[in-house]
Length: 546
Image (tube, rainbow, N blue to C red):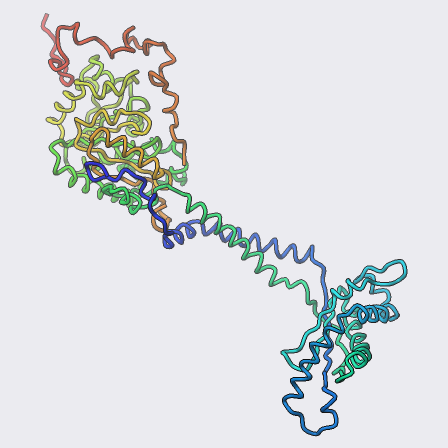
């Protein structure tokens, strides 16, 4: 927690419980994918069942087990039935014995009516026998609902073979059971019926299992992603850092119908401004709400100067800066938008302006504000572009010239909005801390991570700048609740002196900034006889009379 009450630690680091509502919302976001995978797995299960699994038929015969002690009595006691049920368990053990199974196999091979069908169901050796294990695996026995009825079932690839096996077991059962047990008797209720419908595979069951497996797998994957996802999704994630929430901005669809969230090149075009004809109403209202919150936040600050920044590139800070400036200008206030991102300027693209001259020339004492300002770009809105990229933007933004410039411009404008580079990449925005009322932090929905935000807050803490609040950008309009791109982008190419360092050790000599460009932008105030404080960076001097 810093001196401004901002928690600079990871907002989720101490959470130990899963937010089930957020998890459900995250899964609903991916509902089309979940449904697709589930249906696909169901189709795979159906195809596998139809094409790969063999069709089998199950026939059954029912044997009634009687206790011999009740055969000569007219009335049956409950104890007699209990004895019969116990005999069923004993009979099952005996009928599963290899001796009995071999007898059944032998009788099966002697049946001439199904002789041609047997090889389809069992492997027959050279001696014309089938293995005991194969036959035993095809037969099952159990008590029907814990009664005195013994059910013998056979499952094979041929419906007639299954029925014959059951009938042979019924014939063999009485011989072996009476001889071995010496008690009770069995009687077949009737011959086994030839099954008309297959018993295996169960297509409906397999399809449901495959669909369930697909559903569980895809939901499991998205759950794991959710648990390890540290991106900012909603206002609550921001409040975990103790940050004031200024508002959220829905993603903007371009004229082609594609979201600029997936086309970052569209984010620096006029189509994303709230003055565009086809901008969604929800976007306009969002910036109006953000404007109101900023005005309230600035009410306790003497300086009506706002710096807009972000943790990394492509988080929407420039479009946020331009639209905040436009929203403020709609209140009839006189507003100035300054593009201080001299390394990678963008604001001139929004308003379709040239960027040959601008802030860099003013800070380098090569030109005056009045000579390079773009007046009335929109009603009550002036725009100062960045100008050519200098080798030392951070030093220029923190210079006394910048201080004088901001102080003088506050006399002309009601609000000044400054678009600054990302704080996790360069320190330019932090150099402005003494001259501004506060920072507005642009955080991109489902892109900016909590770690990146925490690191940005640590950097801001070192500059002692006040944070007016956070704007959550590019929020999906179809999301339930609030839902990565390159981390450093082109900023990583700037090198020691910026991206124009390739033009020489001493600066961008191509534009005639001088040999000493690498060590100081433009002329040295000390050699001109005037200090930086004596120079007016705003007003163009009147022409001298000859």
